[in-house]
Image (cartoon, rainbow, N blue to C red; front, side):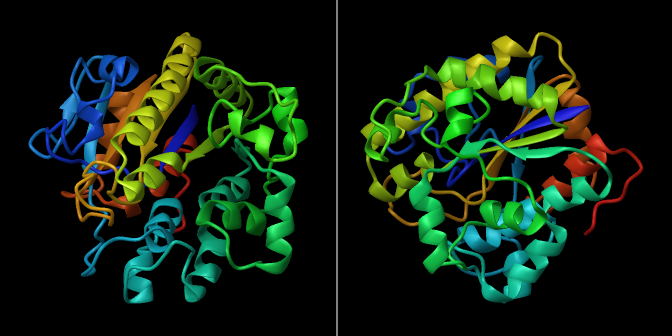
Length: 314
C-alpha cells in the first residue's frame, strides 16, 4: 500500500458561510465528488461517502493559545505533541528544542528505518538553498525532516523532468525565480505527476502553503483561487489513480483560511480527508486510535498503514 499525502497549510473547519469561508465560495468539484457532494464545516465535521471520508483532528493539542506551524507540524509529521513539549504553540519554524525530536522521529526517517521509500515532491529554487546557507535554522518542519533524514530536496532539473512539482502547482512562479523559460502545467497534470511518484515511492508528500498565505491576507479572491487550483490538482490525482493501491491523505496543521474575518490562526479542528483504495479502512484505523483524534495520530497511522506490524516511533 502506498500513501500520497497533501499537507495544506492553514486549513481548518469553519462555518458554512460563503462570506467568511472560501470553501463555500469556491468551485471545488473534485473535493465534493470525494465527499459525496458535501463539504465539511463546524456543524458537519465528519463525512462518510462512497469515495472518501473526512474526520476532524484536534490542532490545539491541549495547550492554550492559537496553534502555530512549528509545533503543529511537529505533531503532524512526528506523532509527538510539539506544543506540549515546547510548553507553548510556536512558529512558523520549529522551536529549537524540537529540532532533535524532529530529526529523530520524522515520518521520512521512520519509513527509511523499515526499508520503505519516502519522497518529498516539492521542487525548490536555488535561492532557497542560498538562503539556507546563512539561515540554517529557518526551515519548515518538512524541509528540516528531509535534510535530517537524507531525503533529497528536489531542484529545477526535477521540475523539468516531471519528477516533482512546484509549490504553486502550475510552476507559474518560476518565471520570477530565474527560470523565464519554465514550462507552465495545468493543475491536473501536476496531479498526474504526483500519482506517478506515488506509484514509485511508498510515501509521497506535497506541501501547499498558499492556503495559509491567503488566510493571513484575508483575501477572498486569493483564497478562492488557491483552493480551486488545488482542487484541479486533486481532479488530476483522482483521474490517474485507476484502482492503484494508493491512499490519498489530506490534512493541515492549524486553522486559518476557513475564517477570513480574522488574519490570525484559529483554534478550529482541521479536516483529515482520505480517498482512494481502502480509504474507509484507513480512516477507521486512525479514528480507532483514540476517542478524539489529533494531529499526533496521523504519522503513526500512516506508518502502520504502509508497514503493518511495524510500530511508529511515538
